[in-house]
Length: 159
Image: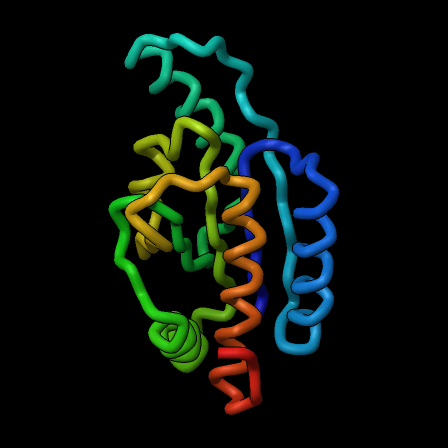
């Protein structure tokens, strides 16, 4: 299985980079994982709604340029479906069973995802109704993907 995690913006925090590197290394035993960062669109703090849409559209174009037509896309959205770790593991196992060997998880920038990306999404996933920094979500996501593989193989992992 090939898993791509596409995020907006460059990860700067050393502690997050270290955590992501650790789980990426662990995941390499189960899947081919690729981490893709697309540039964020520079924008001032107080944008109009129209300007926000333009920013999300530009970031969305960069994201979608990294997604092949045969990729199953899972977007991280605050209003997406909330799953337990076991349910995520089952979902990923079912994707593999039904021939979805390429999966892309997409984490938007600080303004979220544009309509084009949301339209391309095959599944909207939410980790919480709370808002988290997108850089931190990358670490949480990589850990949960690793946990899903461990669950699917009945391998021990901290509960």
